[in-house]
Image 1 (cartoon, rainbow, N blue to C red):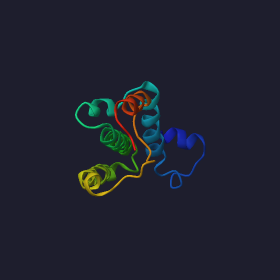
Image 2 (cartoon, rainbow, N blue to C red; image 1 turned 90 degrees about the horizontal axis):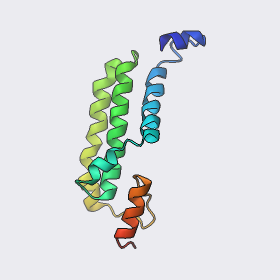
Image 3 (cartoon, rainbow, N blue to C red; image 1 turned 60 degrees about the horizontal axis):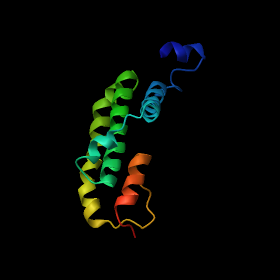
Image 4 (cartoon, one colour; image 1 turned 30 degrees about the horizontal axis):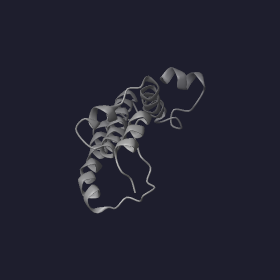
Amino acid sequence: MDAIIELFGFEQGLMRGFIFGFVHVGILIIGYYSGWSINRLLKKTSNGHIAGIVGAVVAHILSDLVASLLDPTMRSAALGILIGGLLPLSLIPILERYVTKSESHIMVGDHEDIEKDLKSEPHK
């Protein structure tokens, strides 16, 4: 990746984090187009919207971790990125219990799963 940065003539300081951003977004795009879904695995153990939220967060954390380990300018921050990404997951049970979602909230998950959920549950 350093060769790519040098090939385009970018200054190293200005491109700090380039590899992180490229790998991070690349992993998410590959996951989307390959059909690999953490949501489907999690949906077997929880309700649909929780699986969608946790699946998106876990995919994001894994993508952040891999990207930070591959980017030499971000490698020293990998553990902090991992722990910082995992910590908000502990808020989900509290938010689920005390925060009322609007009737028009956006559902997160696979299109097929959303369609099945809409057909199987009564909605307000």
